[in-house]
Length: 522
Image (cartoon, rainbow, N blue to C red; front, side, top):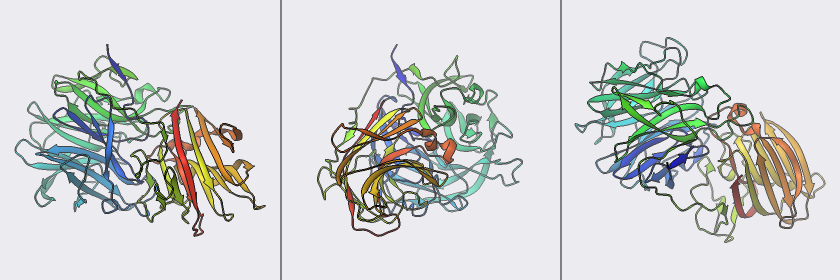
C-alpha cells in the first residue's frame, strides 16, 4: 500500500483552502503580518506541493505598515469559476480595529493577481465564495448574530449575493447557522458546497486552539434552514488530549478528485517538548467518504494520522528544493518573507553577486508594527540546523547584524554581531522573552568574516560561531526553545529563522553581507 506522511505543508501554513481545475490542485494559506502574502501552491496528487509564488506580492495589494503581530491577512479562500481564479480573505488592521474583506482575481494562479476589490459592509472574518449552478455568486462569512451574542464569542455564519460585474455585495444578508456546538464559541471559516442536491455548510468551531473542530450542516435551499449533522463534530482531536502528537485540528476545506475520491485539508499543530507549538499551525490532509449524505472523516478511525494511504492519483513529486540558498539568483526564492511590506531598498542580491546584502535600517527587530531589515523563512522541523556566513563591520554600538529566530517582536533569539562597550567586535546571543532581554553568551572576534550556526535539538538550542570554516566554538547552549512557541508568545503565527541588520534606532549607511543560508531538518 502506498502511503503519504502528514503534514503535507510543514511549518507555518495555516487555514488551508483548496480547489481543483481539471487534474490540477491549488492551495493557499494565511500569512498574517508577513510579506509577500498568501503563498499559492500547485499539486497533481494532493501530496506533493510546489509553490508557484504569492497571491499578494505587490505593495499596491498589501499595505502592512504598522500592522501588529498576528494581525494582517487571515484565512484566504481560493476558488475557480469560468476561467478565473478568485482569492478572498480578511485584512485585520489591528487588534481592535477594522476587519476588512477583499478579493483578488487572476487568469493564471501563478499571477499576476489583480489589486484588491474591497467589499463594503462585509462584517466578520474568514470570507469564502460560492458559485452556484445557476451562475450566481455568494459571499459567506461570520458575524455577531443580529439578535446579540448568547455567550462569549458566539458568532453566526451569514450569506449575501456577490455581483461579479460590479464587484459588490447586493441583496439582503441572510443568517445561515450559528453552529452545532452551543457554548463552544467562535463559529468561523465557512465554506459552502453543492453536492448531490444539497447545500453543505462546513465551518470551524471552538477557536483555533486546543478545542478546534470541524462541523457541518446541510439544506435543500442555499438560504436554509440548515440541518445540523448529528455526527458533529466531524473532525476534532480535542478528545485525544494535549499529549497527542497532532492537536488543534480544524479550519478545513474539501475537494473531490477526478477519480471521485473526497479529501479534506485542514490545519493542525505538532507540539513538542511539552505542549509547545513552535511551528504554529500547519497543513494536513485526510480522506473522507459520504455515508447517509454526511461526510465520515478517515472511516473507522475518525482522526488524522501521521501516515495514511495515498490518494488514488498518479504520484507527481516535484524536484526537491535545495537546503542551502547561495543567493546566486537576482530574486529571492519564494520561501523567503519580510516582516510587513518592505519599505526602502534595504536588500539586494546584485550589489554583491552571490550574497544577500542587508542594509541597516533604524527599525529594530523588537519594534512592533515596523518593517526591519530582515528576511526569513519558516521553521519546519522540531530539530534543525541553520548556518550562514556573515561579513559585517559594525561602526557603532547600535549597529548589529546576524541570525534571528523569532515568534514575534517580544519573543525571539538574536545571534548578532556588534560592538561591545570596549569598542571591539563580538558576537552575542540574546534571548528576548516578554520584552525582557538576557545575554546568554558572547565572544569577541577579529573583524571580518564569521560563520554562525544555530542547532535545535527539540526545544534545546545551541549557538556556535567560527572564524574559520567548521572551527566551531559554542557561544550559548541549552537555550530554551519554548520561547519561540505560540504557547509562550501568544498569537497565531509560527517561528521564523532568518537574517537581519539594524541600526537599532540610528540611521546608518552600513550593510551586512550574507554569503549563504543553509537550513537542514534533523
